[in-house]
Length: 245
Image (cartoon, rainbow, N blue to C red; front, side, top):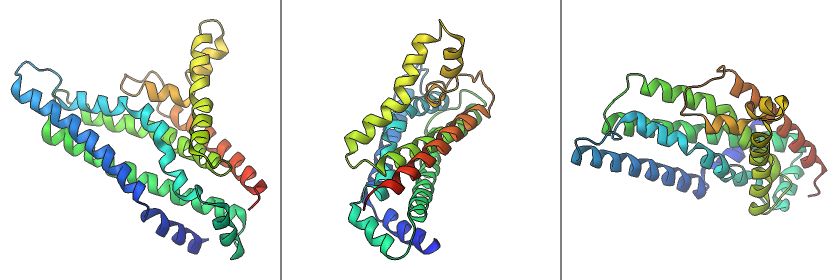
């Protein structure tokens, strides 16, 4: 198992898309911070050139990042079936192949997220003024709260990539799984109590409420994310076992 994970890790860290994605996100955050800094220096009355506003803009992009998470699972699960056949020929079970690739994918994402969080904090504290004493603490809390939702998204994309080969199909299925119920429940929440409860406990709800004062306990996103993670991890493994290599 460890040898398989080392092999997958070797392939993962040598994939260019991984670093291109990190570079793109870094440039976008740096561009936003620099623009705010320039306006802050040139316009004395400019009230948005502060750390808190920058962090809120980063958080506001999380729904987009949530959709673009497919970049990570397809690195290892976007392979041709012949690759899986070759791995299985070494005596590894499908469960071990599936688990090893998933663990390496999650580790790669966590490292990616940690690095970009550090970049955003350096940009916010280094270029912009602190207009709110707890801006960094609130930002950290929001990022910690969205982490289980992102892990659920990675796991879902991973399970879809295990049985689907076209990126357009994977993204379409993913959007339908997460965003369609969110908007349907939003339309029904005024009529049904159960719809209101489900609406306020689905992962996408937490994505859209990151930069607001949370009206829910800190454990709720973790519980919601865990349910989706375990469900799609299980269903993905089941479908992967049924795949013909």
